[in-house]
Length: 178
Figure 1 (cartoon, rainbow, N blue to C red):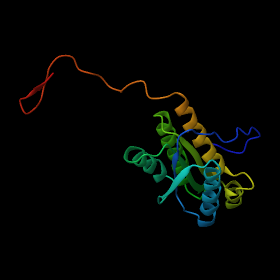
Figure 2: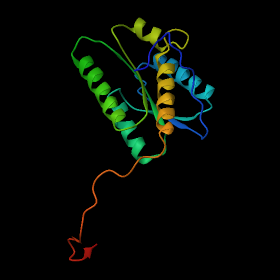
Figure 3: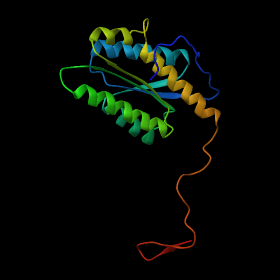
Figure 4: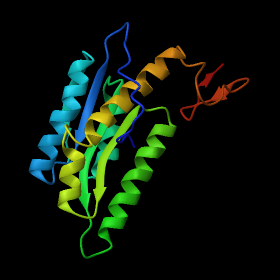
């Protein structure tokens, strides 16, 4: 997750247009509004086109990113939401599983900045959502942009995944293919 750092990498520049989806679970309205403003501010400063996708909760953020990655043409994603610890273990499930799922998507090569805030109190959430304070959403947008730049620096994928069968393949309808 991108967060507050004393090491400012600056915003990357791009020679081709970039399109990013901000995927947010607006569970806490004032916090999500601050997160959206911060993420949009970074993307606008980098002259990056962006769209916002809303989902019911933080557990749905990774699923929405996976769907959008397969079905659309986004170069990267900013994952936003806020999970505040309550009286049950549900917090642990949401925090761990949403983070794990985002990591798994990232390991598949999807460029994701994780700005899902996970805190003990609402005051902590407000501090992290505030673009003028800890600004985790802005940091997540920057992280997504840096991953997109890194991906583009390596050029096109080296080849298809999977295998190419040798010889003739028999199709279920009785035909064959070489």
